Image (cartoon, rainbow, N blue to C red; front, side, top):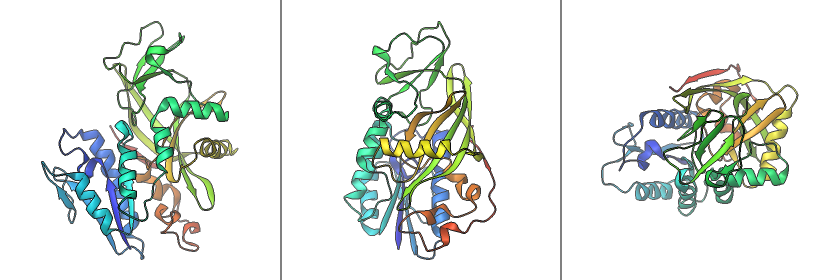
Length: 318
């Protein structure tokens, strides 16, 4: 079985632009974990990969200055039995990548394009969660927001991670430099966390609950690190929340992430990431098994239930 690991950032998607070091580092963590997990599977004979030539990888097809990364990816997809894509949602990139891969390979491990489109927009995600009665952070277009008391957060409607995310103190007008396509949310007190979730043939399974280490510098919010598998779900509320999110957003599949806040009143959804997140880099150790074995077509009878030593994993990102 040939598998094409199509990671957008390190795979040449930004070859014609500057390559942010922090973004490239997180993307490489995810890509390398995917390759490591696939290489451990006896049914995988070959792992295909493209690499921005500023971030060379032995054996990868280089994407050089002026090259058409999308054409290279389509050619690799046609050679593969399975494509496993990862990309940021910003600008519809993830939706476009999954659509193009589906046109060139019979099996793509990704959420459905409809689910990606819905979760790419924080406004649409909040609307669907509200309709389904799932607790979430109220989200408004910046230009049409009601008066929100207390501190607030602004971010791009289609942003990934903490991109262009700023916190504004109570009484300070929210006047971000970038105003087009921004949303605003009330700032809620609580523990920042994320859920790594699997939705597969056996249903929805909460894999790990991860603590997010959020830092604020001059009003800018960024993710400084993750403790993968560091938090428990003793009462099952977080597993139930994950199932509710999947019901509210049909088409979420495979391994994906849900950002949440653990507040005094219970967990609330911040946003949904319809793809692998950085937490995947520590998922195998946190679970005590190879997470690729949880995914069709890599699952083998009994493999996914054989757990080794489970241990939280610290990922420093800043």
